[in-house]
Amino acid sequence: MKSRADDEFRCPRCLNPHMSEQVWGGTPVRICMKCGANFFTAGALAGFEGWAEDVPAAAECCATHAPTAVHCPACATVLERIEFPLDTPLEIERCPRCHGILLDFEEIRRVPEIGVWAKKTIAERAGR
Ligand SMILES: [Zn+2]
Ligand SMILES: [Zn+2]
Image (tube, rainbow, N blue to C red; front, top):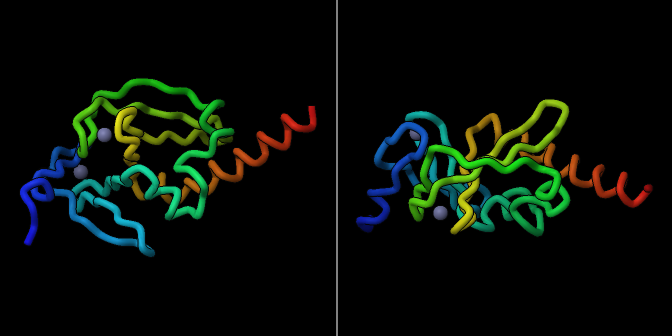
């Protein structure tokens, strides 16, 4: 039985009213079959990447934060865009309230780069 809330999990990017629920390696993820957007609830991305937190603190503080025009599919708060200054900048969208994260497949593929970059940033700071 699906709950009503499940049926109303709307994709913030293409407004498809139903993002399907899937589990990847033990991590629950909501996927939009129309545009390929993926929504990770707080802590899910960390579990998926094997990190202590969804966005490493060292990466978080060097990133640029900006509001977006799309709303969180879980709590309807306006999502925040976080841009990481990698060689090829990577942007993710995160909910400032429930900390859910919205990514497309290309972004998911590149998420490990954030971890590598965060480690490098910490090492550079320690060396200063
Ligand atoms: Zn979509
Ligand atoms: Zn939210």
